[in-house]
Image (cartoon, rainbow, N blue to C red; front, side, top):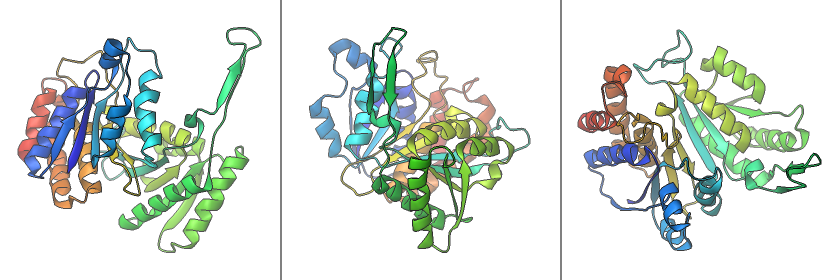
Length: 342
């Protein structure tokens, strides 16, 4: 494997180092190169993602990202300049998020265990409001007006929905729920619903259901066991996946993959907890989400045996030490334990 490493900002370097440590323990053959991209570089040089680095990254099989975000950089500069540029430029069509409560981790939902919270969200990753179509007039005045348009195509919706059905077919339960707001967003919602129904008609072995996004949020709190695979658009996916993180132990357990589906560019894997500058350098960051992201990367690369050993090691370690992570057990110590278990 050719792996690009982007440590980024804050705790990003700390948690990514643990992923690399666990990767070393698997024995998988790889070569890597680290890229200095993030807030510190931007403040130092004014560069966000130079074209030369962008083209180099395209030549890798996988990108492992730590975290991006700096308190001295205006919001949107790094996110759009690095994360969204890679998502759109590398056609990272699917954002795959795990909502998986690990053994030993306490959920925000009383009385819920690992068998109650174990589903995935397939989020469309290249369209919707994040495309940036729109503009404004008379900024800062009482007459200010802005538009922010949501772009939806049959092409992007269909490849995302087909991925969700393929994924559900590999899972024990085998059910896909479409999450949208078809009763109000009739144009975009109608496109998603028609595409979903068309795909479903060709996959008779997978059960289907539908939920308005507000109802899905309600159900995620009251009855998370009803979900297997949720497929949704970019904005709704952004919202429900953070709620999913909350019920599965918090952002320290929230892993994600940004997947290129046709092999034209590398997929990118990252924990979603951000750079957490308030605890950077203190060894308190939970590296499990970053290591879970490595597990996703190994699966995507076809390294099934290594991926299975990493997941088993994560589950064993977390079951033993979850309450002590960040409270007496450092970021590096957690990485050591997982690597040893591998």
